[in-house]
Length: 190
Image (tube, rainbow, N blue to C red; front, side, top):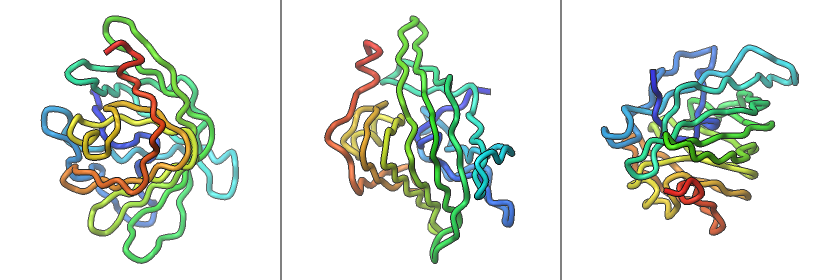
């Protein structure tokens, strides 16, 4: 099965073991792009201690640069995730750290490898909003409408602090967006 994305794949909360979280968030993309953002489960490895578990990268992910499909793989995945204590108004808070590299490849063979190592925190609120905050290397893809709402390219890489909200209807609200971003669609020649 092919997964399409609009939320940060490495920054979407996985279900907490002590309560049942829906497997799918409300749709965050236009129907033409995706039905919803998957909650990606963390793995069972606990190599770091302190609640850290190996993050399990999804397979079959397809993003888009305009109408052009872009295949997403994770050739280096040493990313770890852990649950943080819940705060009032939240249903899940996860912290991510480690090494994560993402490869984007077009059907014509163009390819780019980017560092998406973070670290970062993803918070799921009771109203359905998801806040994504990263303090390091960050990479993500959105629909054209979402990218326009944040003022970024459709697939981009940046470093430093980035912070934004994804609302249940798929709309986005920027909190802090860096000015220095790399347009990965342009890097792919699209």
